[in-house]
Length: 171
Image (cartoon, rainbow, N blue to C red; front, side, top):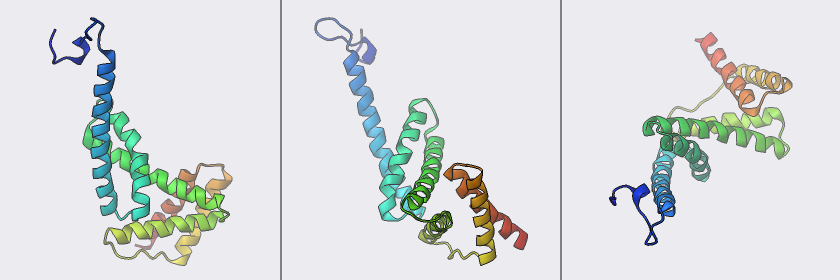
């Protein structure tokens, strides 16, 4: 038996040290989590996320990141995917929360446009201004998805897709 393989370690009574494996695994997870949260917070700040949303965003991203990496996934790809998922979930949660707080569907989507503008400005990009007719088209798309019973992510996506289509048509 060697000390290099945790599964081969035994306690003094001769029983395999299964708890040692769990503790070592937990230590690796804790270290990986801490490193991820630090790197993710830095990335979120660079992406323009407001300070008050960085911690919730990174905590949302942590689980999918760990699931992927501990499952053998590429850490860089896992990071990018987890952050993208967290970004989408934050938008959905803010959108849903606005409606739960009594905002109309239109106002909830306008909150998404404001957040999108905040992120763009935080990245140093020019201010995002959409013509009113584009916003109206986006709101129609959001309402259509809501009438279909689509989830918040699809509703938000439909609105942003309509804005992108209007921008392409105007170009």
